[in-house]
Length: 262
Image (cartoon, rainbow, N blue to C red):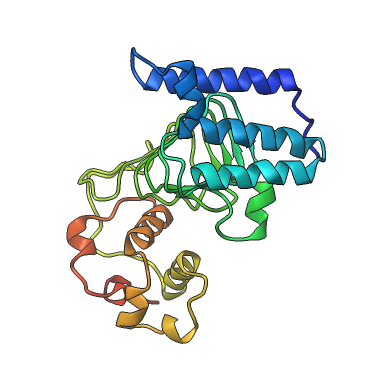
């Protein structure tokens, strides 16, 4: 179903809320109006909102023009098809992508983003991010998943399944990570109980271009070097539903040695 086109009055109200949130995060001195209009964190938002305004009115060429201007000026890749609520703050726009739906008063720290990472389905169908959600630096929600209101996703995290409201994913590398309010994290498991097929599915989701020969266990050194192991670790933790201690993670030189095959 096609979403209704926002009126220009609605666009202006959303931009006003965007400015208010950015000023509030900048402290008591805020930003003078002239500086604010040229600030990359605000430029990328108003360029997106104009692009989205024309896109919803089927002026696709004009929408694409403002999309490309946004890419050139700020480095932010915010698709005009995306739906973003009022009050968005994008702290560091460069290398940030948004293809999906964002609720109100969300904060993205940059060098990550949502959608556009796994299939064509991402661009039109999701992800769907709730209100008051924060994504830390390099945090990524690549697939068509639902992230509930009030979630906090720490730096370097990759979210590959739905998150209930107020879930907290702390920064990779912290000693005490919280995956979900309902998950007990006080005691780490002795082994990573994943089957061979599950491991390969996770590895392929992180690097879709990997060949079948490279997926033979034990994984070769070249295969490991080509992977972002921090992302693999985060994906494994999400799949298991609990954290993985540093002691367990670094106990092995290859992923194969810490997987219990079936």
